[in-house]
Image (cartoon, rainbow, N blue to C red):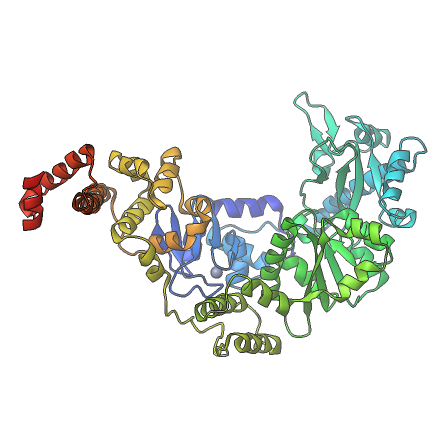
Length: 582
Ligand SMILES: [Zn+2]
């Protein structure tokens, strides 16, 4: 069988498959509210299921290790199938046969797309060379330190102002401006127009040296979006490409290190300043595939982050991506640029010597991992215990090897705890569960109420719960307001709305004893009565103390009398004598 499966067949298979029953046949799922839950098969989430499968979205997601994907992704990860193998299983389940497309025909279709891109690239490139029209862009590049040589090597181009310059160019060459090229769109009046207008154009070259798409940067900073990529096509998948990689490999088929930067301009600046080791993702976060691809070509990958908050956030994500991929013989480093700098601006301001120095001093993954855990915890015993827990869950998905062993030993020394027993198969010892933490924070009744509402979000509309809208109660009041404002709320939506309370919510949703809507409504009434009464008891105590101190005003006196009357039959002798005095 050819490795090629038509895109529309893959779509059909995904549409017809049901991810819930698929996952359930491998990992038994339990329904909680709108979603289905299980222990995560890809990480150790202890006794606390973090793995959710959404019927509505046909998607799985682990709140702990962030594993996620559709039915194909699940089979690829869980059954270690390749893409074709995963589609074959799904097709077989559906009783469908994978169309055996003749491979020549597919190649023709692909070649046609590449030919469109080549033509477009030539057109854009020539625009940039035009004495008049290209002048301001050429000087812009020069100002940004991009050399003419590098501009030529990367075949930078220019799409001019106007709606259909490329359409007309294709027509002049007797090439049909097909929508499938993703270079054109069709307006309501059926006229074709260019996707890229008035932009600096960066052709995106695949590892097989084909132009698969384009990036375009605005020329007028008023225009939006600042960067635009070709829409995805059969030959262009953003998550698979790394801008600059073919150029890096053209200089050296096995570079000693590769620098991952954020944008096209950063890559071009690095190359212009004698640092031809830079690649960039196409406006998306680095993923596992990117890192695995880079490790096929080099042993050291350095993630370079801008010196701002977005940069620091991105670095945390990169750390989580890197941990399961890194293994003995491979290194990941983290480089944080000075405040408000990106590689391009740093090179321009400080010249070509500063960045290589920073690369030299980049932080090792181990140091960055320790730092990022320790900054969240103090050095008390409690802090160390919590830090160790975080460390263990982070390194669990790491591949076995010397690096992992050393990492665990080092952290054990820092924490004075022996963590060497930690292995990916061993469930984490939980001395202090999240449930216990929660009980300290939340009253039992409130907790049951929350559980009841999570299982039956529609009950949030019950008038009994109005009480919580007037009395701002931790979590429960905002939750009710949130649910009342929306319909069809799924559990992941709740989690998304209350990220801080994620653990409490997951714990609650994890209860085996489901409550039916009818029982739920009864329970809500009882619970609210109970809470109101309890509130009354508290108030009674407060007023009694005030009475003894002779601090009651007339209104409070009436309130106190009312409260005592309401529980007249259970009054203590003291309360009875107090009642008589009032
Ligand atoms: Zn997981």
